[in-house]
Length: 145
Image (cartoon, rainbow, N blue to C red):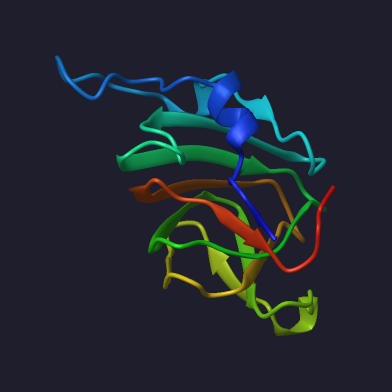
């Protein structure tokens, strides 16, 4: 089943920076984040663009310690920069924490289009910057609602 990724967040959290105009400095840690409507401990805000809009988007997201973003895939290439904490990333339609690879702060995950994957915050809060090209969406392995 296909659902737009964080469509609700796109409506709740407008971009923090305009796509045109003067250069602006943004502080990721000071941004106001909106809670994900389906997944406890996951919050996000757009820096620019939106998942459902044409063009580049960038989302500042936090996964609180112990939170999970379940198996899903996207139609676009995703570049995920780990800003702080250690994100665990696994491939496949089932969550297998023992098979998830650690991505500590400063590392980047490049996820090809259509790759079923999941993210875990096992040890600490994790802040990521996710960049891609819209319009995008999310196909979950199982209905998350």
